[in-house]
Image (tube, rainbow, N blue to C red):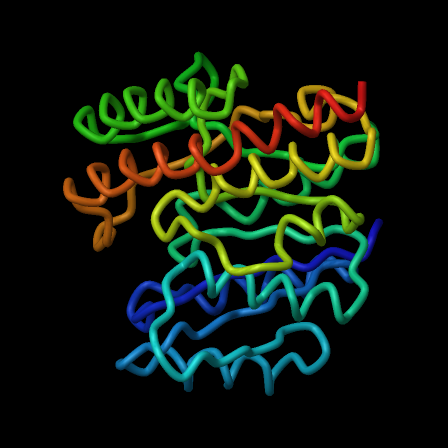
Length: 257
């Protein structure tokens, strides 16, 4: 199995962090590692993460940000640590395990089977799949996904699922090199940056290098920090992403052709 690191950004997750589940996952899979990023928490998230890293040295790492910088920057800093350590596959997952850890094995299997750069978890309610989401968040999410698809000019279904896996490669390292302009919808900006990096390098279309994988399980977890105002902020950031990257993508496409 390829050496894999999963970045877990954490802000005040002391009461929701299932440490036993994370430890069990690495004990069952020698190729799996976790990088927890404490994003300036003011509860005991830091000590909880530090204890895991001490109990499983070399398998669980703790990165500490002195001030709260947001999920986007916390994730990016975790990826920086993973790049330094030379992992073959690097992903990120929400600390509340709304997406269960078993999804990682599914993502890795797809990476081994297909020559792609990115696997995106997708929350699709299908027969035989256990996806539980409130109606309000579902419909707001579908509305947002439509705008995200337009902003990216890609037929993407679910940009905001907090479960993604990447192949450690030049386009991916380029996508994470600089701080994100978007704080709330950095997932969309990652896709835009990845598309730009691929085009600038004269590579294939991003549609051929990204797979959306319907999750077997996903659930809303109590204590979510997402509020209605976040959807409004997200919509504004989509406009920013479209304005910032659409022209660059057009130029890169014209240059490569």
